[in-house]
Length: 288
Ligand code: SAM
Image 1 (cartoon, rainbow, N blue to C red):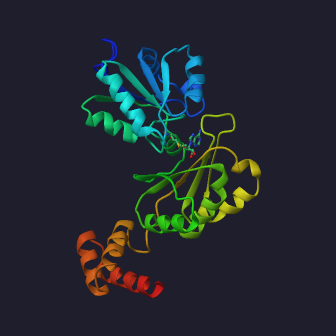
Image 2 (spheres, rainbow, N blue to C red):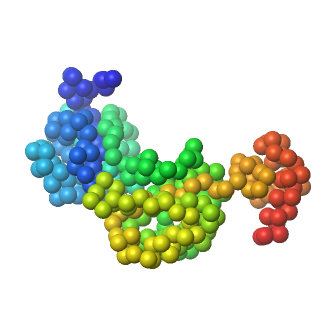
């Protein structure tokens, strides 16, 4: 399969959003290299960091920085280059730009200015972790970084708890213990937690364990708390006798309607038994 830009050279002018390795330089894509070699300029989250990658592959293109704190000005620069008919690439320090990384606002500005934005897909920590996690849930929600403060983090987790899908988070080493402690405190203890650490690097490890056991497992060995982390949590267990979707519908309706009406409507929407949902609603009200 050929993209319209291959064979005939790069499309000019256009912004190419290029994924780069998470750690292992061997993960750079052939098309990513072709685009970085052909670009007139490369916008980088950190120019010194990207320079090492470019040097490794003998790429000399001009670089400039585009990070959280200068994104609007850097987007203007991108647009000026595009108006001059240049090919520009956007990279972040690791993985896919604009995914828990700078770039989304610049991409929006470039698109709004009427220029093509072309993705060059490749490494992404969340997808790499999920692919090797062994979780079998058909759906997942990618959350990225949870809030740094405990109250806000716990509130976010309370909102995520009933969603009928796996949850995927990013976390830094200095917060891994508190975040895992909050996951264990706020979500059902029997959910599986996959801790994917240092993916594609020398000390890569992927551990899978019941959420209830995770805080002790992390505390047992300092090496388990080093490096970069993706945390993936399996979907909630089905409520006894009711599938997760029916329980979710019931939760939503209970927030708005009297118990009896919520159970009746939830049964109609989900096809689950009205009596079972009524009993479950009673249980939930008692628990509140
Ligand atoms: N844009 C990147 C991507 O596509 O995955 C994510 C950038 S975000 C600023 C950095 C976070 O991604 C880290 O704190 C960690 O949670 C996760 N991450 C990046 N590289 C990783 C790796 N090699 N192993 C595990 N997690 C990683």
